Structures are given as structure tokens and as C-alpha cells.
Length: 450
Image 1 (cartoon, rainbow, N blue to C red):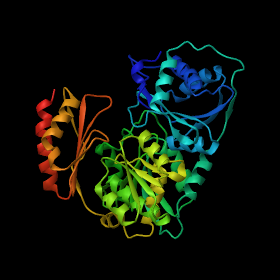
Image 2 (cartoon, helix red, strand yellow):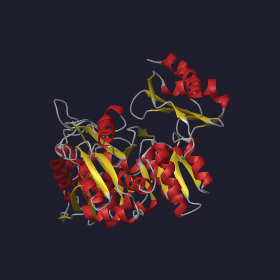
Image 3 (cartoon, rainbow, N blue to C red):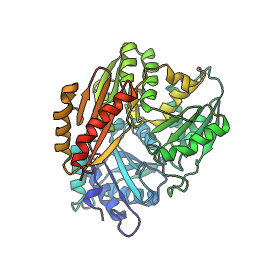
């Protein structure tokens, strides 16, 4: 059983436990067969892995059975972070499948897909997987093979090879894995460095007994913030459940804006390759563009979302990309996102600086509203109303919803892909300008609130 609603534009995500599950082992088996058919994998291999979520091993076994029944052969690398799966896809040159529901609650599980070399799946190919999942696909002969492979150390070695980590001062670092996959990758990657790790919730537990593995919610950062202060640590690293995102806490226990991290890594990468392209999304701080320009780089603006970011990374041969959601992409990592590699870059920079807050203070300063969500009856009409009322204040773009840009500010109104929500984000040089723009936009949006 699998309900159509669990199929998203680029992945699968739905409830698997409780009284009203949205998919089960039979559904996973059907998707496995559909994946093998859609990707034309008869007689070919793909790589599969899973995070620590409930029923992950059983779901992988069912998916694998369905795919092998359509003639696909499977390389199972067992437990892995999502960026560990991206690594495996690139390292082996194979399409990949990761069982994870990222930061969703414990009742969820899901599937992320990629083409060979960690290249993103297109919406069209995802639509084909969905269609075939509800089609009767009979077993073919010969049935595909199955082999297992351990790649955790190879993944760690790859990441460590991409960052200059020599000459670092000794750092004390809090790592909050949230009982997610960073509990597996942290010892493998950080264990050989001049770093004292203070681990929080490193044991793998898909029930998330300590806090949800969603660092976008401020409440889920509190444990790491307190631990940084209590231990006099130089830094805190907070990962989401599948460890493809990493949030940074400075030595004062304050969250470092992901756009600041993007700017810092962009500057380091451009020092290595002057003139290279950096991909950002529409709600990334203007500070990043200013830093990239100062370093002689080129900025490429993407719509929000990893599939779009990865596609632009490839088409522009971009050296690095960053999103405000703390996804960071690296050309030398097959253009894919990896929270742990971003963390290594931050450690390398901090290891030669006095403090994380001092590093951040080197960058241009902007005030931000944070994301403000509003439920409206007609998101498209409400967005159009904001454009009509406020578009004359700056330059209007429709790359990803509505973006109005002034000389030292911008305002973004984006429609949610899954709910009748509008997401408002504003940045300006001063708090007063943010408040002025916020109040003007909300006066329009909230009139339409359902």
C-alpha cells in the first residue's frame, strides 16, 4: 500500500506507523520495481542506503526485492547519511536511493533518489516512478544480484581530502546529532583532527528521544547552545536527521546565520579558484553577493530547493553553493550537498581565527525578518496583490515566487509546494527598514488570511 500523496516533486515522504499509515512494505516493494523500470536498470546496478529510522531495514529489503525482481542489481551500503549516499553514487558512478525522512517526525520515513554521480532526479523522472508504482510490474528473468559494501571510511577520507586542515589550533566542538546519522559520521570524520568533540545524542535512535532532528526550529538548537556555553566550547555543530544539513553555533551560544556560513566558505573557495561561480538561492543574504563580488567571483541565483541548486551547480560548473536552510553544495563532491563538509570548512577557518563571532563580524551586516508563514485562501492571488502594491519600490523578479529588490534590501514572497501557505522573508540594512517592509507586506497578506 502506498498513497499518491507521499510522492513529492523529487522524493517520497509519508507516515509509516500508527493507525493511518500512508505506505508500507508492499508500497516500498512496488516503488522499488517502479524505480528499476523508470531508471532502465535491468542488468545494471544501483546503490542503496538508509538512516536510523524505524522500519528502515525492512523497507530497504522490500524495495530491494522489488527492484531485483525487475532485473536490477543492488549495492547495499547499509547505514549512511544522505551525503554518504551522494558520495556512494559519485564514488561508484551509480544511481542511488536513500531511505530517510530527513527532519520529519519519527512516524515518517521516505526515499530520496539520484541519478549516477549524485545528479538530481528530474520532476519528470519522479513522475514516472510514481506512475509505475501503481502499475502491475511482473518479475523478469534473470533476477538482479545483491552485494553489500562498507563505505563510511572512504566517505570520511573523501571529505578530509577536500579541506586544508593543517595548522589548526586545537578546538573544542559540541556536536549535536539529534540521534541522527551524524552520530555515525562524526567519529569517522572528526576523529583524526585536532578537535575535542563534546557529543550530544550521538547514538542512533529513530524515535528521537531527546529532541526532533530539525535544526530549523530554534527549540532544537537549545541543547547545543547550552553545551557550548557550559563547556567553553569554540563552536557547536547541529545536524538534521540525515546529516545533510549543519547549523553553526558560535562561542557565545548564538546561531550563526547560514548565509554567513555561505559567504565564509565562498570566500575560501574563491581564494582557491578566483573567478569561479557561486550558486545561491533567492532568500540568501545580500552579504553573500557582496563577498563574492569582492573576491572576483560570479553569483548565480537559483530557486529554493536542492534539485534546482544542483542543476545550476552542474550547468555553471560552480565551485560552491549555499542555501539559507543550511544546505551547502560542493563541486568537488559531485555538486551535492553535505553538512559535514561544510562543517570541516568552518573548522579550518576557525582553527586560524580568534573566534567564530570574529569571523562572522568580518562580513557585511544585514537585519532579517526570518521566515514568516501565513495561511491564505489563494496564495497566487495574494502574491499578485503584494506585487501590485509594493512592486514599484524596487526591481521585481519572479525566479521563485515574488522577489522585490532595492539597493540595500529585498522582500520575498514564496508559495509553499504542499500547503496553502505564503512564506515571507525580508532583509535590509537596518531593523527599522525590515519592520517597515514586513508591516506593509503583512497588511496585504493577512487581509487574505483564511
